[in-house]
Image: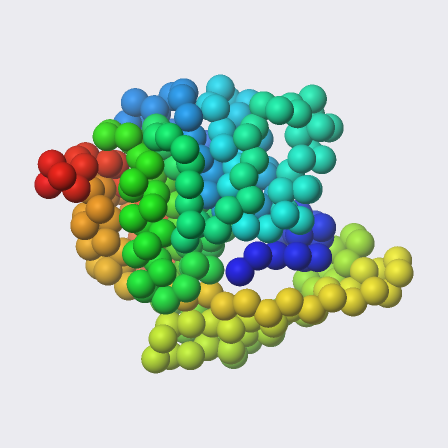
Length: 252
């Protein structure tokens, strides 16, 4: 899926997100594996809060997103920070990823890989990331957990009230596929204009995720709770996974 009009209200509606803590965690994980600079891809970069922070930290960042609207917001932010041209932006679907060369690291946050589709699509996206990853490269990404889909989102509705817009968010959970179908309705307060978008998230068992990473040459070095970055619990709503590219498929 790709956010359209929602992109212009995304930051307001996601204002509770602790980007500073996320940034510190990601940079620490990268540094622990010797990646403190070089070419890094932000896969599903969205409006680019983390993208720009990583660029400011000295990484050569490629921001990749399927949504032109999200990338447009990111460009405006880069302009405001006098960072125009410092981040390469690509409008791409992660199932057709083409980076034209290798990268030292990749990050992906805020459920990007849940949006990719059923497990065969998830596998393809992992394979694509692995294809462009240098040996000893680091991949840090998060996933909403099956627990969150079944116990937190499934069948629930949420109302988000921001300065410029309100959002009504409805979820329907399909247990057989682990899929949550999401309908959002956004109303701009000033004009009364309303937009709707529909998309789905899929969840995957952690052993299946780890097995696919291993299949494509990654070793999982850490799995943390993606909300507080502590140990994973049975009721963790998000995982954040660090994997290192230890070998190519040919070497395996």
